[in-house]
Length: 333
Image: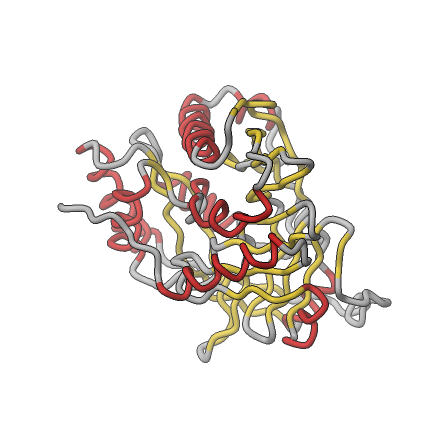
């Protein structure tokens, strides 16, 4: 299998120039960038709602959250995942590449049809996550994962790798001592450290493998994260778009090394991720906060799809990875 270096799409070049211009003038803006960087949007912050795009990023939002219109509704949420046999076919393809040394880690995702008696807007209103986005009537997401933050010239990333049900006895100890999970997490930390080193003058790991708790409609999940930091050059705002796009697609939802892994993903998944696993965020004129677009529900002509997945290493178990894909299909609460 031959691998090609992915060139930057023309639309991405336009977005980079626009972000750099806005950054240089310290004008706040919103951005949303799809997985393959073919349909990025960059919008001055005060104009975002005009496009029927609503966000919540930490304590910043352009949406008026009133009393939740559907909070008294009994929520119906059903998921119809692909068969294990279908998943195993893609898993085996990925494993063959891993065994040949084509990649060290591949993030394998699949779409799951769901049935829910809530609209995308109602899901957005009911969700409780650090990062939320309602993109027209096309998709909604409630992501717990930071892509990068920039504060006072320091760039940081918080990749999440490793998920377990909090209901499992000794769940935290179990996942932190799992050798497969440790290897996968260490690979991602190394990849993100390399990505940040492309834009920063100095890079370090601030925290390694700490636990976040995520509430879902099916019980809490524990997720393992790390924090990697770097010091940006003084003129970073003037090249804010160039910096961001150098690090895309996000390493936590691709794998390593990136060029080979992107080709493996394309071969193994057999569907279009679209905006799923892209990034979105805001630049306030000084600082930036952004998220990886996971926990993602999309409206399609065939009904709603929930896209999810996880990292595959050479020591991964197909049954466990299949279950993780299903466990990540949930509603935030």
